[in-house]
Length: 251
Image 1 (cartoon, rainbow, N blue to C red):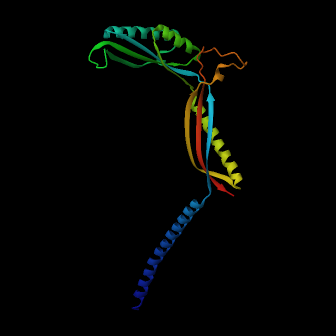
Image 2: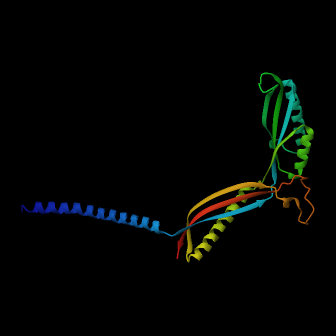
Image 3: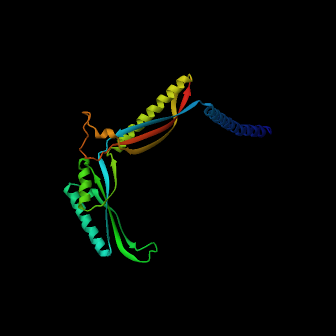
């Protein structure tokens, strides 16, 4: 009868030890599986390729930057002259049907004119006024520029052509770049007696440039220049996309 408590204690101890052994075994299996996965990843065959594409589109709007600069020995007179010329330029834009929301005074400055490099004696003042216009009808571009210069603008600070469907064209360029990368990977893998698997990594970069292509000034009839925007040729906008993709290779 006195041995029963001893056997009971041993049984309890064994019961406590068995779960510990099972837990340790489970942890060991997880560790081995992790090591095997890492080893497989390190020995996995991959191929990295780049895909490039570009989409050229005709612009459908322009950003025109015009400048008015006046000089006078009197500051007030120079400012009044600037105001008068700017008002005339704005009136011309209104006559062309350009909405007020598409016209912005983007820069105003007043600076003194000095007699010499010592900058000790002021002999007059210069007033700069810059106007930015979004033109959504390119057939009015030449009339806008010429009319603004006649109305009082004396600087053309820049003309930038744009497309209102930029995102759509970026998506198209990206799709072409991905297709180019896939084709390149398949051709290279075939030469290596392999096949292309799933993508592991993808990187993308896009860029937009404007190129004054001469083809934009020639009609489909073959010869006559397109005079719808006068002598100002909008050219084309080139949207480029590049992707870098890492694919799995398998036999």
